[in-house]
Length: 236
Ligand SMILES: Nc1ncnc2c1ncn2[C@@H]1O[C@H](COP(=O)(O)OP(=O)(O)OP(=O)(O)O)[C@@H](O)[C@H]1O
Ligand SMILES: [Mg+2]
Image (tube, rainbow, N blue to C red; front, top):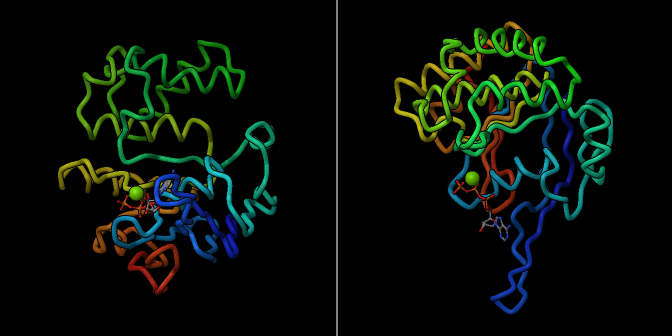
């Protein structure tokens, strides 16, 4: 297993409603095998994004345990996670969130390679072109700013950026919700193709049941912070 989560809880305290506690995650158990996709379904507010942000440790769990590649990361600090080389990356619904609007793509895509992997700028530039090829983007986009790309192009660029960090697990929180259906299909096919080629694992979140079934080996359904159903997906 690449990720094992047990009894995971994340509670938020409401400052306005008399300090009452909201149990956004209320005891979640799940595991993801190498090279496989776990799909997450559930209505708005059931805790999907909280799950994504807690397992990637953008949020600190209230209780429970998160083990990634055999390492307990439940309480690891940001620095410890970086030192481990954190092979888990998050892809957001909104690809703009992954880019600095004032930077050309070239710089945004090369920065993590230079800062996290210590590559020289010319090596980074070459790697960036390779990653763009992986996501079927023309290197011509490198000279552009984020707002000069379409939603689908930008989401593919976000995927290229995340892939350059060499993750073993990508947590994708509604990655195609903002895209029209044709572009959505392209991005999803691309994610599957990358999985076949690289053996990457996904935690794939969406409220679209068809999409989740198509993408996933196993599917969980959440409601009010709990898993209420588990079943097989359609991915062979
Ligand atoms: N930082 C926060 N502080 C307080 N409450 C929060 C916080 N983040 C999320 N919540 C609450 O936790 C619950 C779960 O939210 P979450 O964003 O995880 O839902 P979701 O399943 O991703 O919904 P959607 O499908 O609309 O994206 C909601 O009731 C939400 O209001
Ligand atoms: Mg959400």
